[in-house]
Image (tube, rainbow, N blue to C red; front, side, top):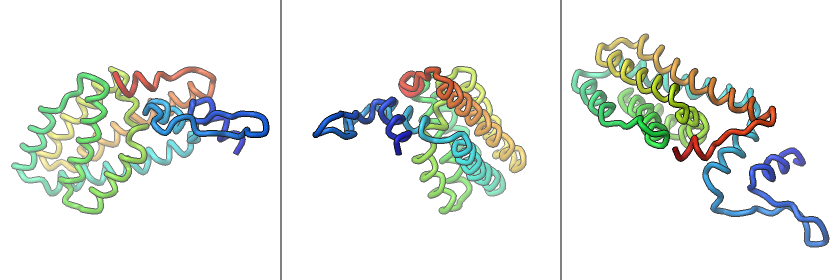
Length: 197
């Protein structure tokens, strides 16, 4: 509990006061999103982050594979048009559109359960996983892999579609785990820039 309070205090989410009216108090109910993400990243162990990334990857891979197996030519053209209109030029847009792309794959899988699970996972883990989109090289690699994934789905190449999205999640997870290590070593992570750029 003490360690948890230290993490929350360092993240600026709680304030500890001494004395008769002392205790730990929530600083602000409307804390900036970057502060909340920083606290979540500090609060999760590396093994937990890795496990969430594995689970996220399995859901996205399954969605991509089923999408490739079930997609019609019209579905392939629609996904291609969606991706052509998606903006990966800024961090905020790239984060939104990367998450949107994973959701589009779940929809194309024609599995209501995969769609629900993708939505749930993106709400729980997406904000952390997609912090890597703040890195220009990672962002460009993900955008390129998305285009290749669309081509694989249009060609009904399920193994390739699965492989490509697995690589995307692996890249994003590697970035996130490296950021976690930097934080644990006392380094700084400009989460605000990664969220708002």
